Structures are given as structure tokens and as C-alpha cells.
Length: 203
Ligand SMILES: Nc1nc2c(ncn2[C@@H]2O[C@H](COP(=O)(O)OP(=O)(O)OP(=O)(O)O)[C@@H](O)[C@H]2O)c(=O)[nH]1
Ligand SMILES: [Zn+2]
Image (cartoon, rainbow, N blue to C red):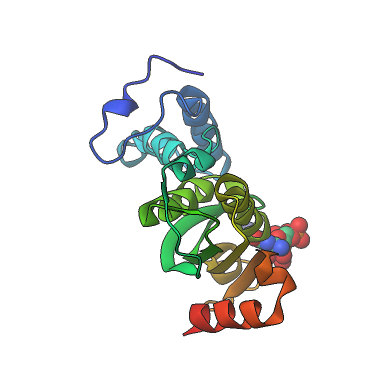
């Protein structure tokens, strides 16, 4: 770790202190540049290791955070119908190729005596997305956090994403969308609830 890094003062994005080892990433990027036949010391590439290190600090900023903490802001409410926040945009990193997968998450829950702030559901998606992972695990992680922290009677999470490891390399199928879902409680067990949430998500 490099606790003395000054990237935390960057205006673009607030990063948790020392969430990655910036110096190690810079060294690794130099090695990769040399390995692909580039000259890491040519002027156009001199700043690239620093930029890439900063990018990874941002893309992996959720690794050491507990996204569940956002859901601890709750308000007692008797409202017991579904709450759905649709189209929460995210960018995550596929753990197989370290290439982005991007798309939207839809998060629904059935309150159990309390509701959380709507932005907190988006904060959970944002923070969970900032890790290297597969889409299936990201989907489950969000559902598990909402179920655990809110004690919800039902949770449904649907994630739709395009994986650049499938669109710009390999099989090169741009536009192919991957859809994953995680259902908990009533949304899993009750056919009518499940149909209702899925039809609202797909509207
Ligand atoms: N299930 C799942 N697979 C993913 C995800 N992101 C990437 N992959 C897949 O991970 C697989 C890795 O397969 P490998 O055969 O080990 O790697 P590869 O030779 O680079 O595979 P190709 O992409 O087919 O060229 C690929 O099929 C990717 O499409 C994800 O979020 N979930
Ligand atoms: Zn991949």
C-alpha cells in the first residue's frame, strides 16, 4: 500500500485512501507496455502508468467498503407495497479479463415496517459495481445486502449489461446483453408477486 499517495486530492472523484497499491500498478503497467513492444519512456506514455493506477483505484474503489452501510439510513413507514428503483446505471469490471461490463440494475423490495432512502439503493449498486467480479455475483450481492439490512419481505434485483470482453474481443458480439436476476422472499416464493415485479421491471 502507498499511504502517501496524493491521488485522493483529485477533483474528479473521491477515492478511499490507499484502496489500491498505486506504485505497484504503475510498475506493472510499465511492464505490460514494454511486453507489448511499446517504449514506456516515450513522451506519450510517460504518464500512462499513473493514469492507469488512478483508473484502477476508481474502478475498484468498492473492494474494501461495506455497501450495506448505506441501507442503515431508514425511515419507519407503514407502506408495504413494492418499492422499485429502475435503470440504475453502473460500470463494473469483469474479473476474467479486467474489461468493463456496463448496464443497468433494477432493485425492488417489499418494506417490512421501514423504507430506505431511494438514493441508498443506487449507492449500493454503485459501490458493489466497483469491484472485479462476474455479473451473477454482483446481482446476488446486491439482493443479499437489501434483504439483510432492510429485513425485506421480498427483494428482486435484475441486472442487464453488455460485457466488453464479449463485444470488443474474443467472440466480438457487440450489443449482446446479459440479464441476471436474484429473487428473495415473496418475490421468489409467490408467483403473483414475482410476475408483478418482473412486469414492472420490464416496462
Ligand atoms: N458467467 C459469466 N461469464 C463471464 C462474465 N464476464 C465474462 N465472462 C466469461 O468468462 C469466460 C472466460 O472464459 P475462458 O475460456 O476462460 O477465457 P477466454 O479464452 O478469454 O474466453 P473467450 O471470451 O470465449 O475468448 C468467457 O466466456 C466470458 O464471456 C460474467 O460476468 N459472468
Ligand atoms: Zn470478461
